[in-house]
Length: 357
Image: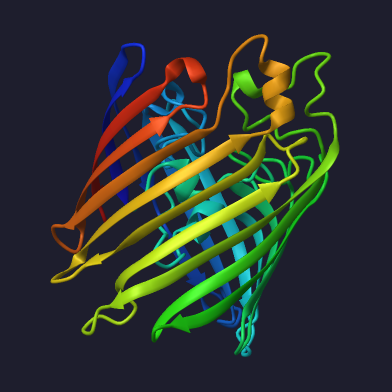
């Protein structure tokens, strides 16, 4: 898959510009029988190549183009996620190795996309928690039942972008995720409602993912605690279903996230939106969302003598035109009130050309 992004932005204070960049993503899955094992075992590989520029550092703290933020936010970068999955007849599965979290977010109904499709802002494409890294090494257990789907993850809390995942594993601590997702029907339309708990034993914030302006300062009060945790509620609920296309339709989605604020750089966040397939144009998709992210009060207080911060919030809308089975064109626009107070408001328009092969 080759995804190209051409963006233009205008930020308060007269800053404006244009950028171009892209990603080439390959997705491969090999059944166990191909290597002398049974097909209850599979190997998945996701190599990716990122190139060009983006407007991520020009607007706020949340990257406005998630796909070009990982595995690095600048230049030509290659990365590889490689993992093995064992699936039992009951449907229980265990995945071990290096994983790209964007691949999992892309599978979420209604909201999904993971930055390559759908919403581009990190606040929706890969909602940041500062607890679960975007590229991780660990073990992921999924247990489906008639009533709910249970997930349990154990992982290295250090970001594994451009790493094999074997360099000093768990040197900074251990992270964990426990999640239950319950299917439900409202008005005869399917939905999914999830409660998630995450935590890590790591001391201090994840400095490898924070921009320079959010690094702990000498003598500051924030960022010295050991361990952090969060609770998240999310939902996806169909409002309409396409009669001639099962699993397609238009729906609502949203999330509310709460954490301790130290050493986590966030204390809460939330978003809500609507997205789905266009009636009469099942190959097209559109979406609209509002997001709001709040920085830790302790962090804002520490940095107040140097730079003024406030909550970051905004609106994003997109329309994807399915030209053919292998070509998609997307127009995306974002309005963002930057958490960097001096920047004020920004508008970002992005044209996306995606070729599948």
